[in-house]
Length: 188
Length: 178
Image (cartoon, rainbow over all chains, first blue to last red; front, side, top):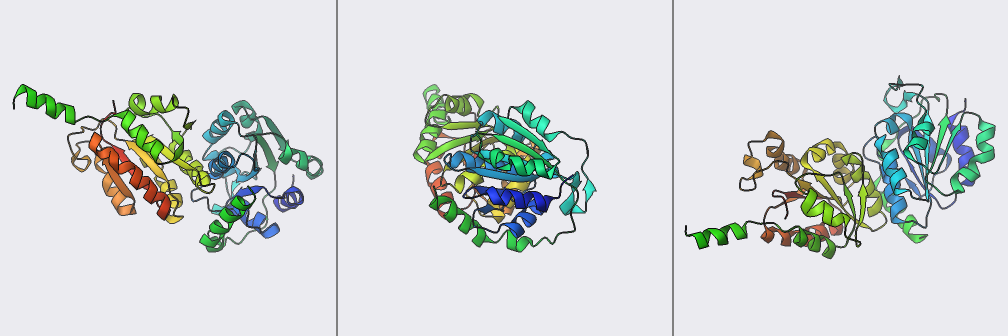
């Protein structure tokens, strides 16, 4: 089992001008590790991370988009796996961070703690799927995972982390949305 | 009323799907995001699906549309969400968070299922229809009833205004477009 912050530090080594879509615990931890204008954080409703990511990927097909979605969040929008697979954006990489809890809402378990999210994505029709529970294996393959033609899906199986501080006013600061839009447009 | 007058009156109470599509195109809409709705199925969604100028994205659940439209708006791409009023009600939390609180220009065209077009939606005997406009008013979302061909002229200015001000707008389709 891995730790989310270790995974994100590895990911950060390989992320350049990609847009990164993240919410809740993933957003807090990712922003702490890699604060940058190209982080898209204003999701607005739990579960829609993957849908925002699809919109960005459609709108800028020449840019890569990475989604860091929690398992509880994806469970609220499982249909998005089918939608994304049908649209088949080559520039979308979809991670689910699986700790089997609604971490931001008290750490309660998700309804099913043995869900095979990568299997669901494969069945939906993603171009490539991965399931990582070993940090060394993820470190070896991370660059390839985010660079290959998508839609790519990868599960990161992690253990619950230390309690996080959720500074929502900062995450949802309108200035961050403006900064994202400017940065995403500037490099198109 | 004479027969001729009745025919004139009946002729005036129509809604052309082609007219709506022309207005949508003129508004710069590139993407249509949709879950099928029987009110708009044959008169709007099918011709949109056949129209190469649009990119139709078929989604599984209506709130996906709100997220996708938001992502597209950050890319300066215009989208129209085409759903049923039941799907609109399902998506309210996404609309609250993304369209209203985060001030995104989410443009929605919402079919009023089984609505009598000669009755105001607020006076509909159908509870699900009757509550739509009051909900939109409470949320501060601009909305326009599209029941007649003469209503179609509202579409382009409202979409332009939504994108100019970065605010949502809803078009309530009160009659099945022909």
